Image (cartoon, rainbow, N blue to C red; front, top):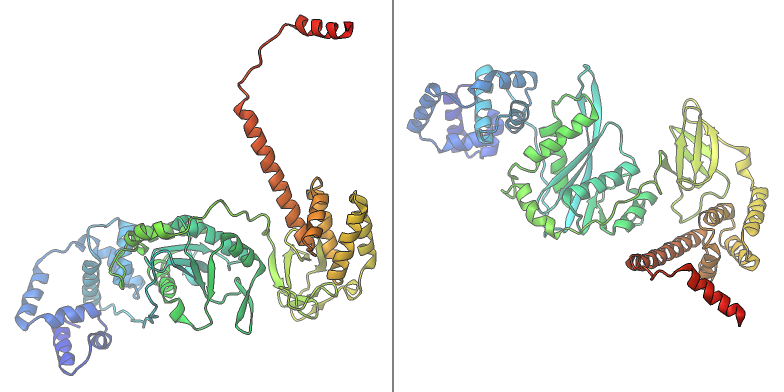
Length: 514
């Protein structure tokens, strides 16, 4: 459509009462172009067109590149082409508006229409600095260098005040360990964390909902308690609570990932980080009218410092989690596998850790605990794989553990109290509790007796409490030892006056003579 025709249509539709956005949709052009042409008188427009025909443009040297991109990807936006010019051709001397106008002219000249898509914006209140981070997941199917397509997964973080973003990608679905690792990476990138973090209800975070109370997964609960941030889990279809991160997810998909070729994850993540620096956090935000990186420079001083490094080895390995159902089975790849009778407990998290190799499935109650069940992996789907021994209690193992623990503890009276307490408190899970006790004895042999006495004094009733007490006592003891060593170090350079050997001999001989 020629410029003159567009100009006339814009003014005709304006006179009929259409809004700028409605005119842009009808004529399949940008809203900015509608506004620009709408301000011009006929004389100004003819003058404008004549100058376009006679002057050279900054982007003319890159005309063939832009045309090639548009022909291959007709849905490219002006903003994305602006980013590609910076990334692929190192063009940093033109504004986004200049690129947009140039792209519109090329579309018009070469009849390359763009399919416009509706964008939904959620209205969310502006929050003070350091108050909130919003988190959400996304995925994108992208072309690969070998001519195929691959689905990639990403997690996005955004500081709600400054709109400063962090994005991390995987070439497989996220697991709980990935979730925590990416949180640590985001906190390092932000140089701190907010008071509150907002999430959608995701299986990596929430196990279930109980009359409005969301039950978080065991791994993430432990991590949240360690880092001590507040959590707000949105209900499904609640964009008002996390509108900012939803826009980030769309932005990442449409501006970074769309039409980008995938070769390997390392290069893709590196390109994503450079995109954040170049565009995602540098470009002026359409609502705040400020660059996120500039507002972040102020907001980061209001973030809470994250101390130390979170140790994943204590919780995570290669295993994934599954829910233990009330009929004492877990689901894995479309089949159900049994666990011992009594493993399921009412009002408990009922989480099992599952690992598999090419032949067997291994189920544990704790990440690094004893194997609770071992099954040969079934072929097909819809099967129930059950171990007959899981239908009856194994008192032999229980009795053997009791005997071993009694032999390992010196204070027999304390050992008897501990076993009786656990048997009364956990009749169905006594074997598991005894295994924890045995593990604590092996890990903290010098402190186990004191830990049992302290557990008894505090009237605690769980082997996990015993483990925590023993660990705490050991840490305190080592700290005291370290403090004593520090005092010794202070005086290590002081040297006693040297005496000749015959002085000591004379003193000793004098003593013997007396």
